Length: 558
Image (cartoon, rainbow, N blue to C red; front, side, top):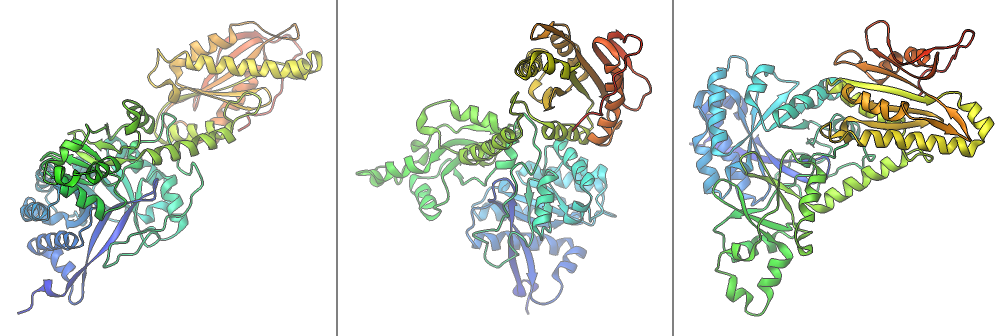
């Protein structure tokens, strides 16, 4: 009598890291040649459980070192209370549970939520990673999604047409400590939209279709540098994580050598304890050099590989690329090419990052930033400030946006000459930048909280937290300015935007425009502050202008 497993085949589809272009994992998909096993699995939890185990064994037969994604219906986990046979199959295949991500598939309707959460907690305790699949096209309740606290959230590509929804999911995932993946990516526009919306991973026909043999290479389109906006404090290490080559701490040098010689792309091996925590790091070149020396194989082949390893360099999953560079900079120069292990809150390895990936990405961001600098002051232009304003609005954060210029600057140029005018602009820019940096003891991560931009001529923009305004203003307005021996005053206008008060930078600029006119109408150095959505404004510096003088100026330029 034939079983449904006799006609069952599996296909492999890569999960691609959008930042590095590397394959981060493989999803195993059931492809029955006859019948509808998936429909049966949806109705029968026992069938679905066996299907998940069969997918794991199919991947093991392909001898792939990549992490795996296995699909399981939400109802199956709730009914079975977990997947005990899967844990046994993982151990039998010589894999670690934390190398396997379970994609929990809809529907969720009528699934007992308490039973599902208990099953997920049990699987997570065994080391499995959890992914919420089909978000945007499925029926997962938002409250349940937060209770699941998945390691990965997979969004349906249809959400890319609703970028606000994707950004909102990205914000939620940051709170949950989860990565964002987009499924069903079929075009380069899809890929660009996914990266722009903040997704770190993606899969779909564009990269590689599901195939019986795991894809060795995937197509990743070349995207413009900076296609995705990242915080000034540096891109997250999550964006650069590659699958780690791991072996148990008890592995012999011969086992490590076999892995390295059979996988030329592997730059090193991590030796982990029973919980998946890195204990030793084996560098490819140094290890093979030791093994290839005279009597090397005879001396080391049957001995523990940890004897030829080093203490691993590790960073947490919440680290930034700059923090990884700090880790690399510590220690001997002979270890600068070592992979850095990325660990979760329990110290378990989730992958590695390579120095080359970080340097390339950070160099691209610096080139892009340099291209946008004003040639006179070397300060960023309007694009950098606009991007940061929109990011803070998307994150639901309050901020204060200020516009500053030099009063009667044309008279300065006409009376003192353009060279004196240029030097005055440079001096004001330096004072603004130094004032922002000097707030570092008062604020956490001031580089992210205070941004100074030169948007052309004698106009500057300052983006900061409201609490940082007084010290910044004091450092710039309450000092004497002169050009060619002539006293000069500055005018400043600030709009404070609370969460939800503006929808984008255009609205912020519209709120700032009348405040700028009010500031220019005052006598001497002036500062006017208003709040988005509220009438009126507060005069914090300056007095009424003399009768008959009014200064009509253009709206803030972006």
